[in-house]
Every structure is written in C-alpha cells, then in structure tokens.
Image (cartoon, rainbow, N blue to C red; front, top):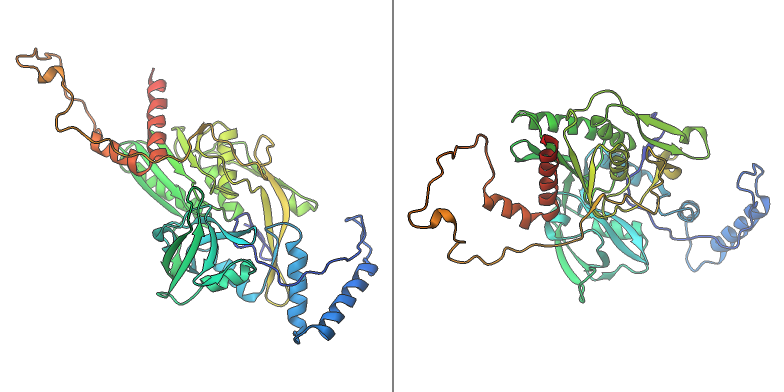
Length: 431
C-alpha cells in the first residue's frame, strides 16, 4: 500500500470545478526551471489586489486563495483538483466503501454534469440513471454555469429526501425527468453467483482497498459447488478506484509477469507491479465484460489479462483513463489530488484517451423474446408409432433448461454471450 503521506488513486471520481481563474500571467517557459517566476507572481498579486479592492462584494482572502488554487489545478487536466477538508474526508470514506449521495460517479462535459457510471444497488441505478447521461437540471436549477463541486453539493441531502434530475440521453429526442430518493450509499464492490454448474460470475463495481481479497473470497465460495470450468469477470460501468486493488485482482488470475507499470517525472511515479505465483482458477478460461463506463483500474485489469492472453475481453471499448492521481494532504487538513503519472499495460500500451479494445466487440443491443406459437416445432419423437432409441442414456450433471437460458439472454445479452463463449472454449479444449 502507499505510504501514509499520500494515496494513489486511478478512479474517475469527482473532478471539482473552479470559481475564479487568473489569466494573462507570464511564467517561465521551461517547466523544469527551478527559479521562481517573479513576473508571473507580480501579475498574480496585481490581480489579487484588484479583486480585493474593486470587486462588487467583499470576498474573504481565504476564499480568493482557495479559488486561485482550484483554478491552477483545474487548468492541468480533468482529474487534478484541490480538496478542502470536507471533500478530502469524503474521498477517504469513498475508497473504503460508504458515503452519502445518489450513487453516481460524475465528471464535467460542455458545462453539464456527465454520468461516468451509476454505482450498483444505489438510488441512481435503481431509478434508471445510465452511463453517458448528461444532467442538465437539478430540480428546477439549471446546471449550466455551475461548477461540478456546486452541482454535487446540490445533489447531496438528507437521506429520504427527493431530487429530480433532468437528463439528456443519447438516442432520445426529449430530456428525461428522473426522481431519485437520496440515501446513504454503502458500496459492496464485489458480488458473485453461479450462472450454471461450473460457470461462475464475479461483478466488481469499484476498486476499493479490500477488493482483491473480496474477489479471492468470492471465487473460493463459488468453488464450493464444484470445480470451475470458467468465469465471467464483469467490469462494466466500473469507474476505477485504488491502484493496488487493480493490481491485486489481476494478480489473482496470473502466475507471473508484469501487471502494470507507471511512468512520470519524479522517481516516486515510476513503479512496476508484478504478479506472484498462484492462479486461483488454475487456468480455467475467463471472459472479461467491459463497456464505455469501464475506466482506469478496470482498464488495468482488462489490459493485463488481455496482454497475458489470460482472458478474452468482450463488450465495448473502455473509457480511456490512463493516468494516476496522487492525493497529497496539505497543512490545512485538505489535499491536492494531482496527476503524477501515466500507466501502461504489460506490453507497453498507453490507455490514455484510447481505452482497451475488446477481442470480441458487442454493441448495445436489447433482445426481446419472439412470440411463441401455441404449438411447438414438430419432432421425430412426436410422430405416431416412431422408433425408439435403444441406446438413449440419461446424461450426468445438471443442465440449465431452455427457459433459464432464454431469460439470461433477454436480461443481459452480453453476459449470455460470455457464458456461451466459455462453453465453446471448453468444447474446443476437450477436442
């Protein structure tokens, strides 16, 4: 784990907005120049003085300086930001799995709040919020012109209180109004179940401090039903989280080799993470499900398993966040979340603004059951006086009935296809 002075995060999280920025400053052209940019600082002092003296309302010095810090960080990239004491505490709580809110990971796009992904089993997901939705109104208040920090504050509130989100969704002509009841969000990052005998399913909704351990425990529980013939690892709409958790999850399925490495300007930003011996599935095939909401830590896992040919990636191209943020506490109880490195897959691929391309692409589709006739298809066994099969024997094992297979295909088509792919791999292996 990182030292106590900083925490490395690669989740998308909340990128805070800015109230005031200073333009027209002249600084040294060489970013490596260690000399103080006195001309730029002089200009900054002039602007600062003008605001204190001439602005229409008196603004506390602490507020002006905080806004200046926020503006300085916001100008770097979408993920670097300043966190005051309250926001820093919320970030620390969020990485441990419990926080208040609606249950959505958000960013800013063209002045609107964009949903990166809804978190599993939260009010937002249950209400129908989807990855890619643009939030344009919060109750009756337009989002345009608000900083992301201000918009997030409006979305917070007492558990049990209601908020109406007006969202624009791709493919729909009219905005949607969605009612959501606020609640305390308790995120269980790992869920698992058996799809069929021998075929397991593990869903990771976010990468928290203990996600790696939780994945190993989940697979061990699945093994209690018998040997594993294959696993679907679902990373859809997973916005990321703690770097070490992504490494732990990847390591669980790899015996050796590089998992991920990071590279930045300072030595602390240059890191390599290698797998340790032991594959909890003993080589059983894996299909990893991804979509456009799979970001950061999800992409590390998908990229590592893809490069090592340990898993087949199925679904949509991922979000493309390939940078590492280091959270550096400040003396006033807040923190600076600063992008300090890019991360690379074992083969040297940078995912930044590119994402992971799936081995088996699946577009967004929704299946509907065809209307069944009252009479099923005629078979030989239905013919009068048909010959029997003297060599027919009962097959061992439990086979899922057609209704179960049809239900999975309708409820979650990509998951159904992942299960079919695992079965196909095993059939080929047997031959």
